[in-house]
Length: 503
Image (cartoon, rainbow, N blue to C red; front, side, top):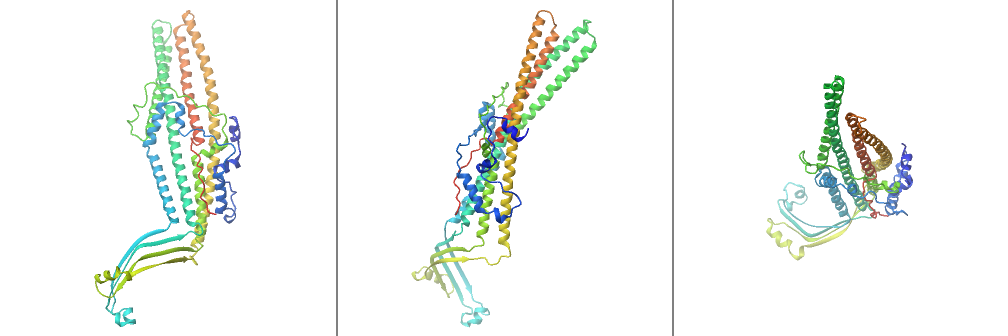
């Protein structure tokens, strides 16, 4: 099914690529253009700022909710996911990266503030009798010099005239938001994986009950075949067929148990626990969770809730800020410095006489003023850094575009699978109803003496066979719902924080 047909298959699914690009926070840029023409940080800032402050006429619905798994109404699933969110190592690693990014925001933000510090220095030196100073002035040859300074207050502030430090801070803030979105992506993948494994495990538990009933029927049919053989009513071929059918049913039951063990192992692994964990979580009798109804409308703007799309947007925003930083490195750096303290120098040996001088009022010293640094020649380093940042921005934009297209494909595929599984489930339920009606009819014929017990057992086996397939289809329907929820971002909130851009 094509993307458009899948999107049109569920009511109103407004499809506007330009609107989605604006809503998600970036605009597609044709490849092959020169960086100087379109990869300017100002243009990206305008796009991102407009996207952040843009409020659509119709607010984007929050579907699904953040804790979407609770809508299935399964306490077992809730407890599994809660335990996984607390103890999963992969989620803890992503959370540590988020804290690291938050700390880096504080580091970059400190550049905008003045630095206050204290420093002290003590130097003792003997002038060489054969050195340069002795050659220029023989009277200082062999003299001991002691120099000391104490600055209780030293002031240093880089004046951010060109917005370099603010751009570095905003880039760090965007990277922090990207890490937050990536943490949400890990959380979404984890919870979706647990939900899929849980639904398949529930279906397999129910299928195991059905297949065990089928094995019992095949065993009863084998016993009937043996009785009829001993009575001379059937030949040995009937026993051989019944034995083969019983072994096939046993094989089916063994395969179901193996798949059940695998799903339980997968659940334990995703939860971040040991192999013995989880036995107490699963009850002996399981109930298939209820299905979540889709909302009447699924606008395309819901893609803005996807954490991977948000992370790609923030990465592009961070790269655009670094272009501005690279440009400001061509401009002068102006610092404001100052100090207040005591300074003294003595020609006497020992530190005692220096102390008497250093802490006297006559040794008070203070000073301050601006300083300027301007790069004249750096061997092409600054131009190389600017070009590298532009190429990084190119890569971030293309990554966003690729993520957007992949998101559209996943939503279209998820909707298509959801429609197909729903249609198959409804058709199979009608088939099961028909087969169950035939079984009840055979039971009536058996009670009236028109059929023997073998026909009742065979028809009952046919009903169980359809119930076995029904459990798998019910699980597929729930899994397809999880896939759609995952494709739509799993309730990741859209961050609408004001962009701190510098004009």
